Length: 250
Image (cartoon, rainbow, N blue to C red):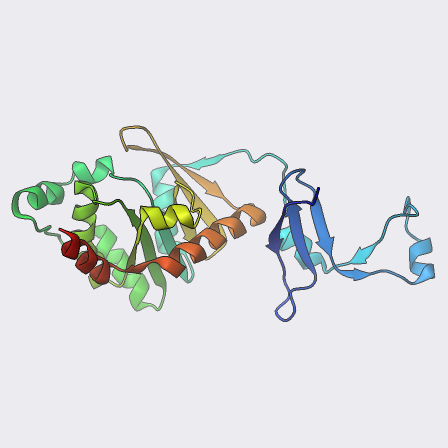
């Protein structure tokens, strides 16, 4: 049976070689590189069997993309550490939002105002907006893709209305129908990616309360989440176009 190989990463900027792949079934790492064929070089290798081959790869490939552990031990961080990531990232911060609602939104006075008037107010001087405006004005990119159900939940409609406030400070807010996300095999996970190197995985309880934040820096896993980001962005549409789609179905 053929292996199920997942591309892990490469430092090559031209042809993608050398590179690493992971066998999804066994966890083995497949190293793709230049074969070592010189007899004098091979004679120096210990324990090289008759059916084995040696390949040469840059040290940086293993440092940057080689898995560090077979089983990841969760690294949980407190809220202050999580918040500092939004101040210290270098170029990009991106989120996937998959839940049908969030307890923090339902507790927000702006949500109550939305239920009453159909429009969500906001304070542009809130710390979140002040920081994001600072980051985007410095040339950094902040974005999200939000999943929505058919029909959208009340909480999703609130966030869709609220997206104009996020956009006003430079966030790129996009939407994707859940059925399209399912076809693209996107995971039912909420997470942020910072600089394509650190993933902050958000864990919620059944009541939509944020329980904790788990940091992931394992290169192979980070690459997988970046691939999820790319797939989500491929099918997502800007919030204002999505709002028009929602309005046309009401």
